[in-house]
Image (cartoon, chains in turn purple, yellow):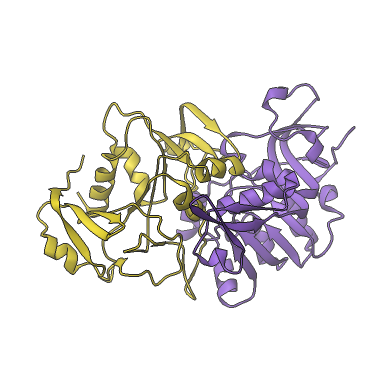
Length: 237
Length: 218
């Protein structure tokens, strides 16, 4: 079994217009930089994205937004992307903001064969509008449904050709859960190792979830707080 | 000492040995700097870490190691990493002893608004709705009034809510306000401030505790 593909271009070559894509990462930490860049070069449109954030102006998913590729987005926080804020206020992008924990759990449910679940989060807020509620004990909960995608882009630290993945520090975030919830999960890794080299006790994403593995060519890994500070000062991007 | 620092220093006194605490972005993050000595507290960051340490020196910043405010942090001995789904399972599951977060508005019913201004600001709630629904104690840390001098502590929030009946305490530079079934009670007051002044700067009705104490900060 060998899931390794030669390049990020090859990894994303068959992604269709209008696909639903999950993208791992928290802010700019642990994002699939190379897969995003390859997809931006293809400029396919009408994408429905699911990701905690939307990059920043000039990096990460911000590049997809600027290329006009995104039709709708589900996330929890987009405050670092001014272009997106303008597009939403003008009604040019269909944006759905949901609580971060609900986002993570909806994806977990999607990967775990659970169609829906009750959560206390968002009760009495716009998030619960139109949703079924039910009382358990002395609390009322909101029914939330599972999320799945056609494609998931995840970023890991190390991986092997079987698709087993290990993450590094807080760059893990949404990557392992998204890996479970898509028809086609594509993992980009900083380092490809031989099967057996990863300690099986340390593998956070077992290879069963992963269809393709690609080695990222170079990583910029901007630190978001610094990137934005420099941009504000007119220094970068 | 400015108002924000006073708020952070007072809440730091409320953190107990052995607590697991989530601090929101901005003012709440300052609390970590003012903990009393000898207190063992584990800070959680909802992007997937327990045991968050102080910011590193600029050159030592690791892009793979950030807090929920997307700022570089460091590891403390005994720290751990986990995915977002587990991070929020521990938040929603009632494992956090305390969550401290900022607010735009709080009201007499303990309702909180801190994530959007319709037609003006599109940012998102991030993890705030999960934190207020799941933490065992929710403390709002904020300046008493807006920059324009409007009250942030209202009879009823006017902005879209983050959670309903979720706030236990409100701490501002003027004092400590407890949310009770009977409404808001001023239990501590900052040095040099009269209760009448706190009420005058608050739209909500405050009950002055018969046991009103000075707000002592670290």
